[in-house]
Image (cartoon, rainbow, N blue to C red; front, side, top):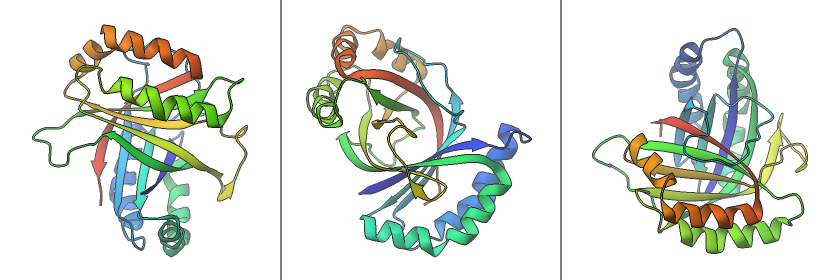
Length: 229
């Protein structure tokens, strides 16, 4: 499945509440009308304090939310975006300052189970590899051993890795230097307390030690997820 993440920055003259209201009530129905879209979720950032980890952080822009649009394949994605491009772009100008796009391939290491009996805590992380490491070696380390190590960390309800296929600004593909991200992590926990317990565990320390071999920065966000489609 192809997932298109938008790194959304609200307009400076809007409160977070105004931004989120427009995003859900006005922009949401426009995107939901795109051809062949499988899932559409809005992830409002509620905490950006690197909760639970000690890695360096890097984000060239303030991220107020992550849009998450899913299609079966790239052909359907391109067709879907084109079907509502004019309306979506016009509306984005009404409530966002900037929206950068990362097109990804999702890998469900610990699959998220739908219809969970109560809301979960979701954490999203932007990854950047060590500058001396190739993208191929980064993928090998992250998708291989690191993904397996996460399975042994306590309290992790679900864990998804999103491998970046394309970087887009203003509708055009850009270079790695313009959007220096190498992956997006999605993790779910029962509560903030269980998240903190996870990242204080011995198993996380082993996983973190391995992460320092291939990661330069990890920029984390707690988000409130709203499913539109």
